Amino acid sequence: MADKNSDTDKKDNKTEEESVDDDAKLTKAPKLKKKLYKKPWFWVTAALSVLAIGLAIFFGIYFSAQNKNKQTISSSWHDIVQQTNALNELSKKITDTASFEAYNTSLQALNSTLNDKKFNAQKLRYRAQDVQDYTEYLDAYGSYVSESSKYADKIIDFTEQQSDKLKDLASIARTSADKLKNGAKYLTESMPGSAFEIQNALLDASQTISANELSVKSKEQAEQAQTAKDIADKKATEATAGNYLNAFLAGNAPLIRQYMTQGYQEEFDFNQLTESAREVVYPASFRILTNQKIEASKYKVQANLVYKMRDGSGQYMTGNELIIIYNSSSAKWLVDGVGYGSSY
Image 1 (cartoon, rainbow, N blue to C red):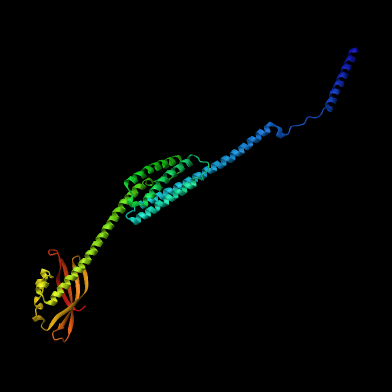
Image 2 (cartoon, rainbow, N blue to C red):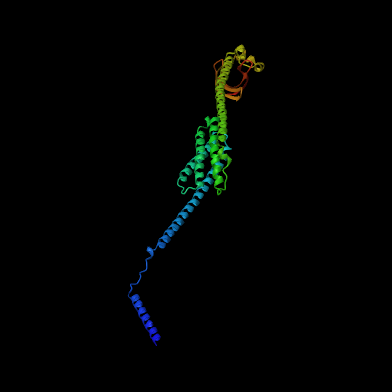
């Protein structure tokens, strides 16, 4: 009985202790939860999210800029290739000053294009290696074309020394072009070799134009000399015609022979110069009307002669056409024949 009572007491005591604990739990204040922004992992997550978004935006802008840069470089490269090809075609057609002017106009246009490309290249963003190579190429090739265009404006004075200077610039430009082409694999066109041979075209043009100008100058001098000779010959033939006709009017056979070729002297009827032949009618005067060159050393002089009657009853006019040639042995212009007809 004693043991049963003891167990009952323990049970009662335990129940009392548990009741006290339960009461204590009920009377204890509830524990509050922490807010999210106060938790470290929240800020770490937020920072990583912002960074990811920022990187996404940056790379989006960067790659977009790179694509635009490639488009700009490709378009510019194409334009320059096309213009240099056109320039080369014009260089093959240079035969005189006019054809060179067409070439020079195209060269100046290429120079202007390169200047525009260099200006626009400054606006390219996020410069990768291809942009750096591109601007280097524009500077090198632009300098080469710019110097070439300056010499082209004074092509007649272009020298081999100036050509050698351009060759040095062309070598630098060629190297920069190859570097850009090899690095930017998206450039499908190749810069023609003629793009770096402008100095050869200028030297050929200078020699061609100089030769042409010399030829033109020689031709002009020859024409001027011929004109002067024609003027002198015309005066000389008119003088011969005048002297011949004056001697004819005078009936002076020895004098008239001085103005006649040997062949014409053999054909001429000297009896018409005698007084008996002129008893009724005599030649009184003449007037030279025209003097025409018909060959290099041959002129045709037309003149009217007035014949009068001895008794004063009247007069008439006849036309004389004198053929005058140059006699090299005597170095004189002589009458080689006379045609007669009605007055002119």
